[in-house]
Image (tube, rainbow, N blue to C red; front, side, top):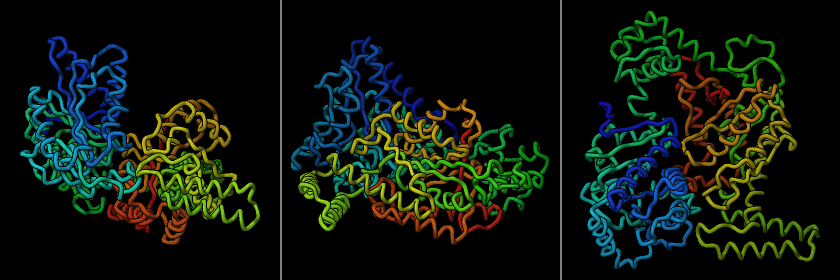
Length: 633
């Protein structure tokens, strides 16, 4: 179904799992239909985190004998250039690990652009790739993801519908997004071989998928905006049989989701929807909530809201009060106070608080001010670091710390059979031989983990908690030495269950940042939710509030915020100093989507922006605000 703002038919699913299963079932249905007619099925495939759940489902259906891939011929969209096939970052390796090695496809039916072609032969190779697709009658079903620049395949901004399989130079944003896979932007190839926009548009059916809030803005432009060379995915608007598949987060900027009252009549019986509408109107008109008039509502598609709720004045005051009640300087609850209109309970006081941090710095980056305030207000605060974060440490930092340990042992005569020196030599030798993106040795991984652990301890001591209240969980799913992690297992959940039973907290804080559906934050949160599900009938768990914070780069939408903790300039400076303890994370350019500014700058920008948003709505003016949403189980 195509909504009138949407120029490509778009389906929205609750989450990426259900969306991926739906796509996999459609592919299987089409493969089976072709097989019944003794026809080959030509399938165009993509790489990256977006399609991995689709591939898992295809593997499962193949193993259950629901489909055979013996009549399927695949063509992949792209490959880095140059790129050895056995490299960790190779799309050949990616496709075999995520799909081909687990299904009954014939090896000769697999086609992936060859990143090992001699450069002088690449042009003729690309022509042959294009010709092979055409000789088979074209692609029947093309699967796509979408990049932050709006690229499909590696068709960067500037790629038009007349482009075909070719060697291209990668956009800087694309290389930054790939930096974590290559353990540093400097290792990301400058070029890639890609099918062109024209090649893709020749497919009989095209399905473009996107998950997470991080894709919401570009999806809106591709689906609702004009067709433009600057957003190559917008050319799908010209295709006779294209479809966009989204989870709710990726769809959040579409008109029918963000401002549904502009496209259809609504029943205004949802409090969050009403707050969302009033906040949007206030922001759109740049008027405080209490100054909005009946005419403002009438002229912006919300006349029926005013009709249902009386008048603008009554509605404005109600929404204003609801927002005001989210603001509290007492995140652990204010003792001896009326808590009927407060986000947290007054009793018990003090509370046992457990902050979960996916990496060893998310606690202070994302909720450092609240962390400080909870400690200062006398609560017993524990922090649990769910992963070691070792892959985010540079090799030269590992050498520097190993060198320090070696010299330390020499100075204080702690050497035993010269073990420290031997270990140091072994580690330096391994790092010198290591190719970009290659897995670290066990010893190097351990040293990198110790660096992150030491920084986390330093930040916690600065905030004011003892070492006994710091917990390093080292969840097994993370410890692979590569960006690709293992699936969550019961072993991960059991570790969290054990800690929860030990502490029996009154409050839990957890990272609710879902912008990457396959990222560490999401897996860590899934493990916490699974542990809570196991323990939810325990008396102490029934009396526990779970508060979700966001990662450093995005904030909760105002209509969803249930606790807003204001920070003074002094508290913001303390938060900054706590973040400074994480010295190995100063080069933020390593991670996807980052813009080279340091963590503390971006964290403060977000906190300032949240405070400014509240201020512009007509609420009190604060220096900064950290925001939370309560998870009800």
